[in-house]
Image (cartoon, rainbow, N blue to C red; front, side, top):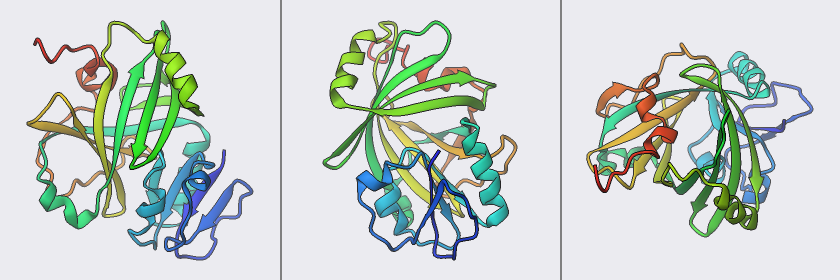
Length: 238
């Protein structure tokens, strides 16, 4: 696993699979996507999102100990996240966090044992395609295996789509608040609510939402708010 650490500090972890970048350095998208994970390590500037915001897996760390723990979690391929249902956000109030926007289309494939999906993610003129397999551990955690695929492979895999599920289409806004990397998803079938989530190194880690976010409830353990379940609902006829 290759890990990029973005920080304005000196190298503090000596590992062959870790490469350091300053937050002010320009990095092209091809370089960004060579890494399996990007970690923002304090101190860094929010400018880091200009280059690294397109990465599908970003974490934030405050110090060396957190970084070491994060790397151990990343190498285990275990994804732990907290998910919240919120009121539709006021984006004027969120401008201070300089959210980075991307468009996502994800399609679930037929699978009897695991959750298998393909995803198209667009940032302006840059479009990336992925295939992901998730094996559930518990409501908050899963083992995840993800690989980049070509557009041709993406279109071919569409033929294996699960016909009981609709494609999920959403705009994702990524931003940092108090050294936490949030992903705010605006779905095409809701105009009064949204989902915000964060990936964590451990399930019981404390999360502080920005004051501009109006929480409805924590839906981490609510299966009905999993994307795979949202894809089953016919919102046009319900």
